[in-house]
Every structure is written in C-alpha cells, then in structure tokens.
Length: 108
Image (cartoon, rainbow, N blue to C red; front, top):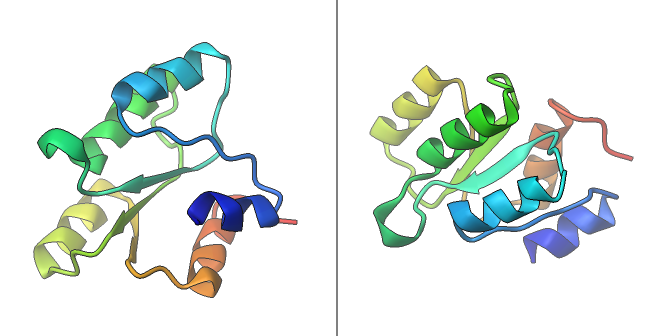
C-alpha cells in the first residue's frame, strides 16, 4: 500500500525487506533522496541500524530518514530525536506522511 501511495505522488520507490536487498538496490546504482524505514525489522534488527548502515554505504551521513513504527513510547521518541530522525506512527495518515516527506524532498 505504501509503494502505491508514494508512486501516486510521483516518487520512485524501491523496497527492501533486509540489508541484503538494500545492497542489491545500491549495487544497481540507485541513490535514494529519502529513507522510509520500519523501526522493528525481521530477526530482531532495528531500523535505526539499517539507516546508519545505508548512510555509510552511500557516504551521506545527512541522508534524510523517517522511521515508521506502531511503537508510540516516549523511549522510542527520545531515541529517534537524539538520532536526528523523523518519526511517523502507524497507522499512517497519507496527509501526515506527505507533509513529513515534503520537509525533505519536493513532491509533485
């Protein structure tokens, strides 16, 4: 659903379920303008670690990233604030997502 929504906003969307799939996308030469990453990933991984890894791979420590999570705890909010990451909670409201994305990239 997210990919369809973003595509309607003329975004080029690449999806990955894990670090290996991210590597495959990067190997193809794709350079994202913005990362949308779930906080809780498979096998106990967390989205902030994936963002850190992607930024290192792309040599872009300021690559904008938004964490998506159903976890609305104060601890998570503080962790993301310290990391300088934006946060949007599930269920995602399209208008809220569009506004947050627009802070980082121009949407058509």
